[in-house]
Image 1 (spheres, rainbow, N blue to C red):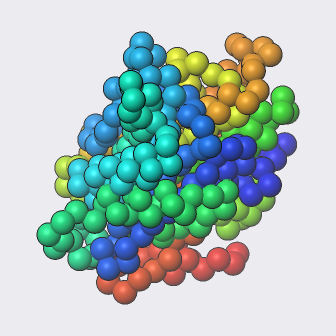
Image 2: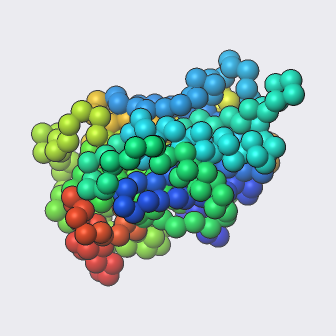
Length: 333
């Protein structure tokens, strides 16, 4: 039986906090995941058009063993500036990797493309450092889903995308959570109906309780409305287990299965699909091989659920290029 955590959010992993900042005129935003102390992180990219910052530092053979925050941002490559605002905020808190008398906050980031969603993108100075700083300042254990943070201007095939999250309590006592900004080329719903591809993994009615639909996967030709580089689903999966960077990387790899279960098609040459993994290290593994396998499987399930929740929670705005799930199908059965 699948048991979500108390909040059904990635922050059910104790010690993690998430903050969102959005600019509705811009129709873009930033989401930050942080913690009270540095945490182990890794990354795995499967899409063909990623946009990232500081991800090389996450490799198992690199010097830095912990990060201070992870950033998901809209704005395409401009959104990578959000990490600068987060770094400034963390530095003011005295956080960062110690180098002599200086501390350098370690803040890997990933971005999605939301520059053609009807928002005002005529800025003369990048708004993303300020959005990153605001998101960090609001970080806490409870946060909104849907059209907020990095999911503010996102789309997912024929519907609005959004920010989603979910959690899973394992029988071993470990907790796994997922956080995702869904801006996919593919669709998260089946055909022309309201049912989600992620329905087999739904906990209760967390994304409408519509159940499963009988439909064949769509042909790729039917799902190419966008040009090169306009799509990306960027995510974080997290656990309170004690993992090495190599073990965290394996969890990120496995979590991509959840993306493929929830979005059809996924990992295309036109998407920048990416998953960060984070581990707070609160609980040592007692059976490493078995528990690593369980963590990867749980991360995939959480990510599939989080993707559906993000789209289900999105809200409509005037001038949106596509409708929200709520506007098209409503929340009832």
